[in-house]
Amino acid sequence: MVIIRLARGGNRNRPYFYIVATDSHSRRDSNFIEKLGFYNPIAPESVESFRLNSERFDYWLSVGAQVSPRVKSLVKKHKKAS
Image 1: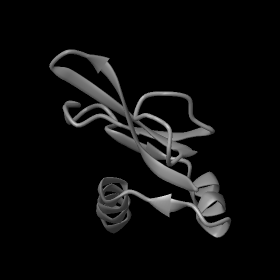
Image 2: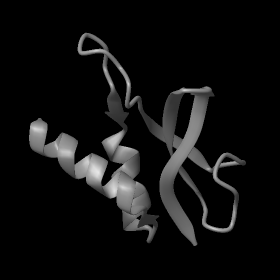
Image 3: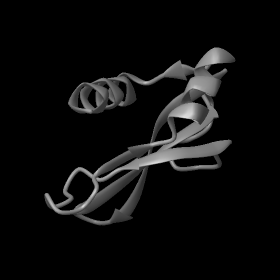
Image 4: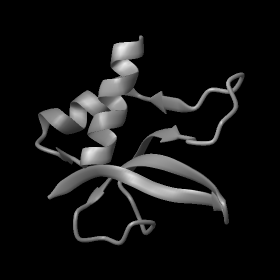
């Protein structure tokens, strides 16, 4: 099963997350199928903190991918703000 979830990047105490489509059995930061966007929780106001390729996100949902609760809340929050 394919799941859309966060994969952690960045340095210690400076997290940076990629939104990825991956196999549900793979580890958090291991190989993924496709990178869909990013989320930077500590970005300053002047810098973009969230980006999502909505066409590819919708494609993965249409083929049956599941979305993690954290990604679901991020997408909902940023769609509301737009």
